[in-house]
Image (tube, rainbow, N blue to C red; front, side, top):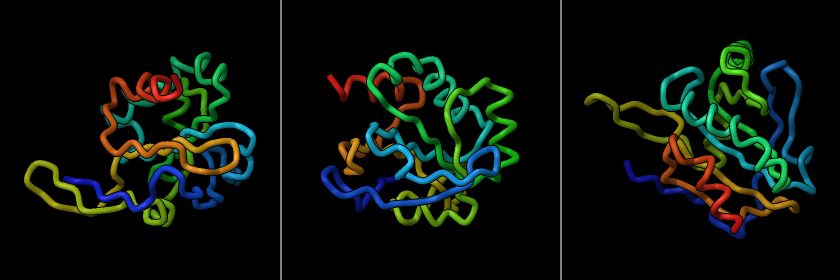
Length: 156
């Protein structure tokens, strides 16, 4: 499905506070002074989402070098996010958006199609946010296998 993301590069990133995998509150303002990769994904521990998360995990040194904080957002409960982190040794924060309010705010909650069925869900979209909280890039055509490198290539 075509993604019609309303937020664009140059917009101020909408602020948020969500619970992480440990049930702790995490806000966008916690990462001011660093770049933030805010990536939305449909469901923890599914094949595509696992490929994407593990690639980001394996790129941690490069992300640290570029002062990028990775925050993954899905409609999963914190307990499921914790299992995802433990199962795949993920080394970044996952955020729970169970009511999909943040996904709606960022314009990534919409109609999806899978195996002939239509349903509402989270679209796989990433936002690269600068140190001051402005959106540098909106990636609406995310490829799970290359996403980690596509972000780094943007910074070159």
